[in-house]
Length: 168
Image (cartoon, rainbow, N blue to C red):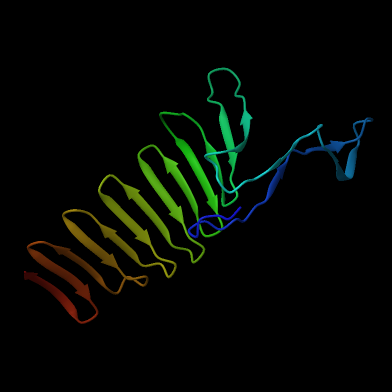
């Protein structure tokens, strides 16, 4: 079986292990005893539309159940919850979190991207900030020396050389 070129298999299997940190006398072990429940093993196939391995964690009371989906290219944690987080995706190249109506993406270079409605904010790895919305684009350098705002009708900037405000 071959995977689509856009997907690269990172993980190949999943096994449920239960770690016992105490012995039968309730004394702490130096290292945990790992117990494997019978047949608690799943191969992770490339096409998740045909087969999907996941762990269903049942919640107590009114709390929402959580699914931990084990894909060959990512791990996804999901819950049906109207407020707070509803999804986390862990990939080789990023971590993505969905909170309410906001998607937060963390890249390995330290870049954090926040997408909410029609606005996107980037916190670059060097500390600079870029905010893009339908009405404007705002840039702040990592040291705060340069700040600019660009709209359809105007350009404003604060730099070490002075202040600029100009109609476009």
